[in-house]
Image 1 (cartoon, rainbow, N blue to C red):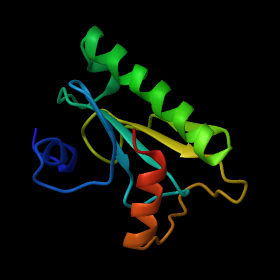
Image 2: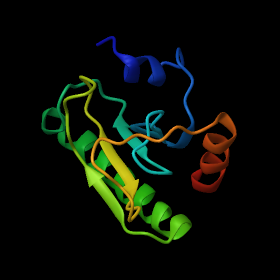
Image 3: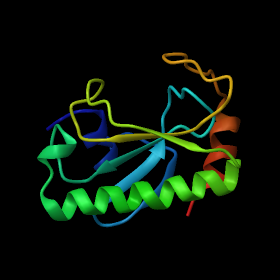
Amino acid sequence: MDNVFSKIIRGEIPCYKIYEDEKTLAFLDIAPESRGHTLVIPKAEVDKVYELPDEDYRALFETVRKVAARMEKVFGQRTLMKVVGTDVPHAHVHLMPLDPTWEYGRTLELSEEEFREIQEKLRF
């Protein structure tokens, strides 16, 4: 696979990394729907979440659990989880603090400084 997430995994494209282990990577979405919108991806390169081997599937959702709990602690808001599968052909999960002003499809314009500030708050 050669998509934006594959390039991020290989270090060819920078990201605002929140968490990484041998099987998963979590980083801020650059077109966030809410402040702290994070993507959690497996390093295994498959298109759909349900195509992951069992071990990678479990690792993905363990990371989702860790990052969601961290987000709730940092932002004090419930975390929304979306598994959409249409925007990038690489399995991934969206995690977003549930901002009461959230609107489906709306994206926020954040500065580099704002991204870095959020990254520092969420980073493990």
